[in-house]
Amino acid sequence: MVENREDGGVHLTRLGRIVRREAYELDQAADEPREVLLSANDEWATRDVLKTIRQAGPCLVVDPYCREEQLNQLARYTEVNRVLVGPQVAGEAFGLTLDNVQRSLEVRVSSDIHDRHVIPDVGPVQGFGASLNGIGGSKQTIVVPLSEPMFRIAREPSATTWYTATLWTHR
Image (cartoon, rainbow, N blue to C red; front, side):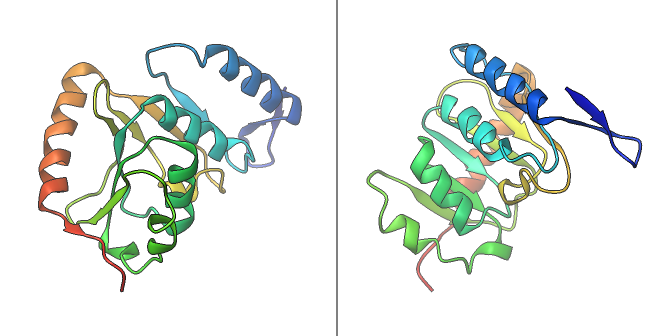
């Protein structure tokens, strides 16, 4: 289920990815967030991260490099109601998604963000290594729940940044 790569690393085989997906499905009912390893070049990685975000319920996603394609996925497959992006992507065509979503979804822009988080309205914060636009790409990444002291530390500054960030508007 695991194969060696030429560079000395390992990756999941097709069977390994299927087993991982099935194990994830069985574990999906768990209330507590858990660690998720998203392998490089894994066609299931985006699906896995969207399921993880969906489990958070209504939440703020902080991702300085979230693009329109990822916002569309968040709108379609999760309950995300707020997305905080960086100025590098402020020119994206987010309006295509925002004009067509059937629920409350707001995007704000701030240069004061670096780390990527999923911050639910209630419950533990999760951190993820790569921006959503890099999930499943050439590098592996992880999604991890932060411990209670850490998620309390992450939640407050993100809330402050959200309220001081600029509302994204059509360009």
